[in-house]
Length: 64
Image 1 (cartoon, rainbow, N blue to C red):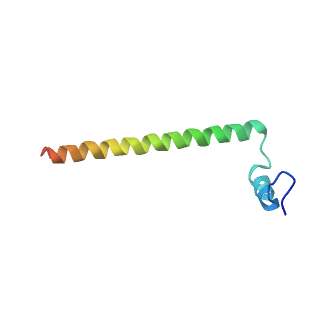
Image 2 (cartoon, rainbow, N blue to C red):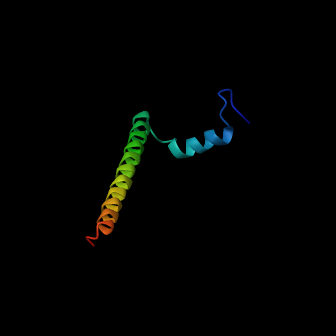
Image 3 (cartoon, rainbow, N blue to C red):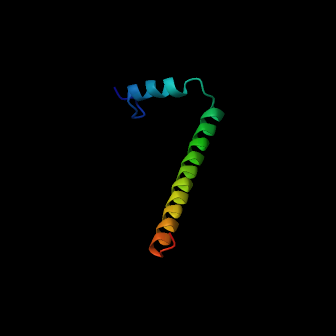
């Protein structure tokens, strides 16, 4: 069954079980931490790609 807001009932129950005891501040902080974590993962992947690129460049130049 879908509520007046267009959200399925099982989604509401899932949200309640996940975020039921949280205050607004806690949920906002969680969202900010998740966003920061995504940025850090992207930076990590970029760093790994740069290391791979440098290693391949050395191999092509015969320095290795």
